[in-house]
Length: 130
Image (cartoon, rainbow, N blue to C red; front, side):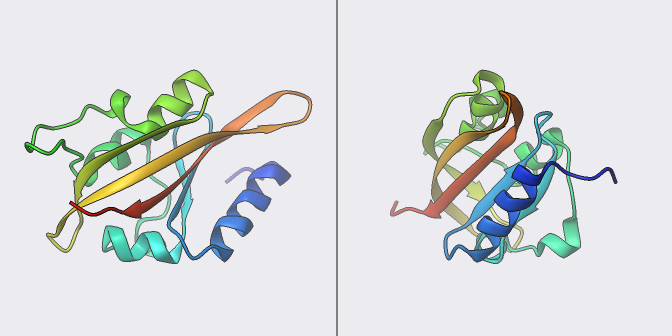
Protein backbone atom coordinates (compact mmCIF):
# COMPACT_ATOMS: atom_id res chain seq x y z
CA UNK A 1 0.00 0.00 0.00
CA UNK A 2 1.50 3.36 -0.98
CA UNK A 3 2.21 5.92 1.70
CA UNK A 4 -0.68 8.30 2.32
CA UNK A 5 -0.32 12.10 2.27
CA UNK A 6 0.20 13.59 5.72
CA UNK A 7 -3.21 15.28 5.55
CA UNK A 8 -4.96 11.90 5.27
CA UNK A 9 -2.84 10.44 8.06
CA UNK A 10 -3.83 13.36 10.27
CA UNK A 11 -7.49 13.08 9.20
CA UNK A 12 -7.46 9.42 10.21
CA UNK A 13 -5.84 10.24 13.55
CA UNK A 14 -8.40 13.00 14.12
CA UNK A 15 -11.28 10.69 13.19
CA UNK A 16 -9.98 8.00 15.51
CA UNK A 17 -10.13 10.43 18.44
CA UNK A 18 -13.74 11.51 17.87
CA UNK A 19 -16.72 10.11 19.74
CA UNK A 20 -18.94 10.47 16.67
CA UNK A 21 -18.80 8.11 13.70
CA UNK A 22 -16.36 9.05 10.91
CA UNK A 23 -15.71 7.58 7.45
CA UNK A 24 -12.61 8.56 5.40
CA UNK A 25 -12.10 7.97 1.65
CA UNK A 26 -9.46 8.81 -0.96
CA UNK A 27 -10.24 10.83 -4.14
CA UNK A 28 -11.47 7.70 -5.96
CA UNK A 29 -13.84 6.90 -3.09
CA UNK A 30 -11.84 3.99 -1.71
CA UNK A 31 -12.49 3.53 1.99
CA UNK A 32 -9.39 4.33 4.03
CA UNK A 33 -10.81 4.19 7.55
CA UNK A 34 -13.85 4.30 9.79
CA UNK A 35 -13.66 4.72 13.54
CA UNK A 36 -14.98 2.71 16.49
CA UNK A 37 -18.25 4.67 16.82
CA UNK A 38 -18.91 3.93 13.12
CA UNK A 39 -18.25 0.26 13.81
CA UNK A 40 -21.13 0.36 16.30
CA UNK A 41 -23.53 1.68 13.67
CA UNK A 42 -22.32 -0.56 10.84
CA UNK A 43 -22.16 -3.69 12.98
CA UNK A 44 -18.70 -4.49 11.61
CA UNK A 45 -15.18 -3.66 12.76
CA UNK A 46 -12.90 -1.80 10.36
CA UNK A 47 -10.24 -4.42 11.05
CA UNK A 48 -12.61 -7.01 9.58
CA UNK A 49 -13.36 -5.06 6.40
CA UNK A 50 -10.25 -3.04 5.72
CA UNK A 51 -10.48 -0.84 2.67
CA UNK A 52 -13.43 -1.09 0.29
CA UNK A 53 -14.10 0.38 -3.11
CA UNK A 54 -16.89 2.95 -3.43
CA UNK A 55 -19.06 0.42 -5.27
CA UNK A 56 -18.92 -1.82 -2.20
CA UNK A 57 -19.37 0.61 0.69
CA UNK A 58 -22.05 2.64 -1.11
CA UNK A 59 -24.26 -0.45 -1.40
CA UNK A 60 -23.30 -2.92 1.36
CA UNK A 61 -25.49 -1.14 3.94
CA UNK A 62 -28.40 -0.82 1.47
CA UNK A 63 -29.04 2.93 1.76
CA UNK A 64 -32.72 3.71 1.23
CA UNK A 65 -35.33 6.41 1.65
CA UNK A 66 -38.17 6.36 4.19
CA UNK A 67 -40.24 4.15 1.87
CA UNK A 68 -37.49 1.56 1.45
CA UNK A 69 -36.56 2.65 -2.08
CA UNK A 70 -32.82 2.17 -2.74
CA UNK A 71 -30.72 5.32 -2.95
CA UNK A 72 -28.19 5.17 -5.79
CA UNK A 73 -24.57 5.77 -4.77
CA UNK A 74 -24.41 9.08 -6.65
CA UNK A 75 -27.14 10.49 -4.37
CA UNK A 76 -25.25 9.76 -1.13
CA UNK A 77 -23.65 12.82 0.52
CA UNK A 78 -20.13 11.36 0.57
CA UNK A 79 -20.27 10.41 -3.11
CA UNK A 80 -21.65 13.88 -3.92
CA UNK A 81 -18.68 15.42 -2.11
CA UNK A 82 -16.30 13.19 -4.06
CA UNK A 83 -17.93 14.30 -7.31
CA UNK A 84 -18.30 18.03 -6.63
CA UNK A 85 -15.51 18.58 -4.08
CA UNK A 86 -18.04 20.51 -2.02
CA UNK A 87 -19.66 19.72 1.33
CA UNK A 88 -22.91 17.74 1.23
CA UNK A 89 -25.35 16.44 3.79
CA UNK A 90 -28.46 14.35 3.99
CA UNK A 91 -30.41 11.74 5.91
CA UNK A 92 -31.29 8.22 4.82
CA UNK A 93 -31.83 4.73 6.16
CA UNK A 94 -29.26 1.94 6.22
CA UNK A 95 -29.45 -1.72 7.14
CA UNK A 96 -26.44 -2.57 9.25
CA UNK A 97 -24.84 -5.98 9.26
CA UNK A 98 -26.69 -6.92 12.46
CA UNK A 99 -29.95 -6.63 10.51
CA UNK A 100 -31.03 -3.34 12.12
CA UNK A 101 -32.56 -0.59 9.99
CA UNK A 102 -31.67 2.89 11.17
CA UNK A 103 -31.93 6.48 10.05
CA UNK A 104 -28.61 8.28 9.84
CA UNK A 105 -27.68 11.87 9.05
CA UNK A 106 -24.43 12.43 7.16
CA UNK A 107 -22.30 15.52 6.63
CA UNK A 108 -19.42 15.06 4.18
CA UNK A 109 -16.64 17.50 3.32
CA UNK A 110 -13.61 17.46 1.02
CA UNK A 111 -10.02 17.18 2.25
CA UNK A 112 -7.49 19.28 0.41
CA UNK A 113 -3.75 19.48 0.79
CA UNK A 114 -1.34 22.12 -0.29
CA UNK A 115 -1.02 23.35 -3.00
CA UNK A 116 -4.67 22.74 -3.92
CA UNK A 117 -4.34 18.94 -3.96
CA UNK A 118 -7.64 17.12 -3.64
CA UNK A 119 -7.01 14.20 -1.28
CA UNK A 120 -10.43 12.72 -0.61
CA UNK A 121 -13.31 13.32 1.76
CA UNK A 122 -14.51 12.67 5.28
CA UNK A 123 -18.05 12.00 6.42
CA UNK A 124 -19.27 12.47 9.96
CA UNK A 125 -22.59 10.85 10.70
CA UNK A 126 -24.92 9.95 13.51
CA UNK A 127 -28.03 7.98 14.22
CA UNK A 128 -31.14 10.17 13.86
CA UNK A 129 -34.62 9.87 15.28
CA UNK A 130 -37.12 8.28 12.89
